[in-house]
Amino acid sequence: MVKHGKKRFRGTVPLTVLTDGDRIKDVAVVGAGVTGMSAALTLAESGYSADVFEKEEDPGGHVGAWHSLFPGGESARDLMAGFRQELVSRGIRIRTGTEVTAVDRSNGYYTLQTTGGEPEKFRSVLVSTGYRLFDASRKEEYGFGVYPYVITSAELEKRLEQGDRALLVGGMEPGKVAFVHCVGSRDSKAGNLYCSRVCCITGVKQAIAVKELYPDCEVLNFYMDLRMYGVGYEELYQKAQEHHGIQFIRGRVSEAAPTRSGAIQVKAEDTLLGVPLKTEVDWLVLLVGMEPADGTARITGSLDIDRDSSGFLRGKQSMVKPWAAESRGIFIAGACCGPATVPESVTQGRAAAVSVVQYLSGKA
Amino acid sequence: MKTTADKWGFRPEQSGTIDLENGNYELWWRLVGKVPGIQACMFCGSCASTCTAQAEGMNFRKVQLMLRRGMNQSLRQLTAHCMLCGKCTLVCPRDVDTRSAIYNLKLLLHESL
Image 1 (tube, chains in turn blue, red):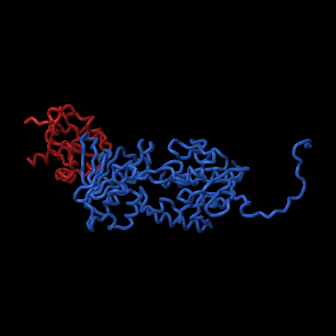
Image 2 (tube, helix red, strand yellow; image 1 turned 180 degrees about the vertical axis):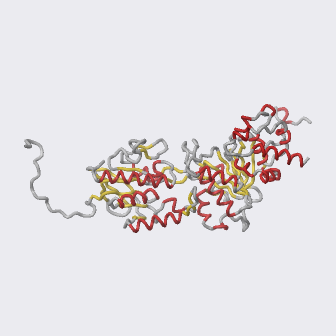
């Protein structure tokens, strides 16, 4: 018998009208890039319907704006179409144009403030807020934003959609295009000590794309190290050298400046010869790295989510359950946890979703 | 002739900078024509470290980098001591037929005499 404390409740449940704001839903997925979409699919396949929030007007995140995907060259558009079709067939609606502005914890559930109206309550939240691209104008020595023929890898992806008109210079095919690796990555001054991981292979992929459009164009890659860690990466690098004659020069470009003829002169050291080197190119492509997205810190500020020194999210047990955050019911996946490729993001999104299912069903 | 700059312990000299616009790439492409696999080099230096003629200044990694940059001036001298022993070919991780490349380079250099 209970002798003191609260009396056991024996009466009938008082009738109240449950508004949508009172209803506690299962799971919110924040961010509908490849990670969030993959997570939502896994949740749906397991019988849970997720509310997927996306601040942009279209789902797909950065990948939706890419031309082709490394190392196999699949079309990003086809990938997105595939996702869209699966989402529709599973009845998953992505709430685009709706930004989550804050997440607060109370009484064992999470309240999300969004730009979509009333706060909403959830039992669990999967954070898949992704990344933002490094702002190349911060590396002033490269002249991005000053010289029109200095562009980022993201802009090149968009241009590649135009086919052989992508890099015309005054109506002429380009004669020489150079890529600069590690822009904003492995750079203390930029505040990013880490390697962004995807730029090496992106540089190889894009160099081949340029060479395929313009076989007579010389293509150079200026690199510090080439990190071809993924399946098929080294093979693509070797193909770039052997089949496309793309030159890789070990040395970080120190400066870019326009010439009288309108070309861009770049300077670097050929560190393998120990000699300074200069050349003139029609286009200089900066392979920009990844940084934590602006929204990540904002929405995770009030939650117990560990962050590394660069601002990427870190799980409670980073070795064995990297997707589970310190707070119960909070899960993290994708590039908000650090630079990641498409298949890595998909894997993380799906793995995190399985943990969400276990959590919601009381099995974990 | 002494210049003012001499007072400061340095003087304007011929730039040692590689200017890719002034390179002569014909030799490189002719060599690629003979030994296409040479393009796969990733500059690891295995060939140079195992080289029997290393002490004589032979460094195949450097030789083919110079070819790629169109700097052909000192190649004859650098390859002069190669005995075509082929150790470099044994150790190359990209399976470049370095021995054949050096042999063909020597032939091309001889032709251009």
